[in-house]
Length: 240
Length: 166
Image 1 (cartoon, each protein chain N blue to C red):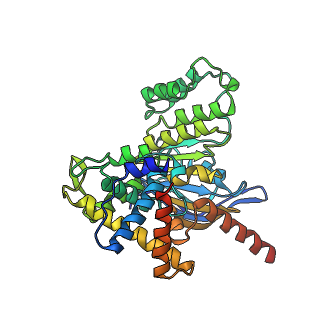
Image 2: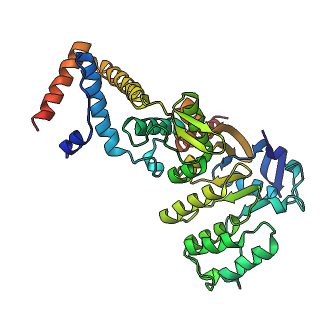
């Protein structure tokens, strides 16, 4: 049992909106986690805090025993939802930038991935389609040899071929010295990859369960289980 | 199309009638499974996502051994290779290999990898094990439809006779 990320009573508010309402959770090395929840449930907020991009919060966040910041950034690779690069950059610039910035960036891997994902170095990033942009983000983030990968909506706007390539890429990067947290609402694409799922609703973790337990004990797919849990949550809110 | 599968799956018919039934049900099951399942690989669409994935993969490997696609002493892919080929979480494959090792179907040799058991009878014993599971399921399903055992046997015999006349 090797804990890489620990959250204790994590709270975060944006003005009057409580994005995270007391989250306590533990993540081990060598596992792939699904952070599942509807839009607005707090997934991005949680990942940003772990990625040390959001420094205002209450409660405790420890990555390998350190608070998010200087000592955690080198071991955390974050894939943001949305644009990641400067407008002036072409694909080659993005690779150079990451190569300069991170010690654990594997340049050879990046170059191979660009070829495999059909990305040309001279292409200006703003001219890339949504799917190609996703491919580039992933190629860059997964060329780092990090301990904790935080992937926010890696499959948004992605076509079936790209989806398969991304899954293959995730599997080839993952080993028992790293942990991947996939925040997504495209559950059916990823469910076969997941060790455990944590369901997030209105800033709180409402269920934590292993994917195989869902299949074995609830006789449901992860996707169906998610639907059931969130349907019940709605009805209990109405009756309250 | 049907007969292509008939001729490509060889069955040994036992002298005792009940064993014959088991063989026939297994043969029918093989048609369904052999026709529908890809060999140790494929995407999420090949798996039933309402049942534990590790159990499905274990059954897949047992089946491959039974039909001789995996031979005694043959080396299995590493956990990472297998996971990549099947596009599943490596921890799932680790669990599969652990269970198969516990059941003495495979052995792990430190530093060398995982190998199918050297026992030459393993294919046969797995065949009987899988056949038994199929028959149990088949009988259970038919009982649910309110067939009694005699009716099940005559229904099955009639079904097989109708196949022969195709």
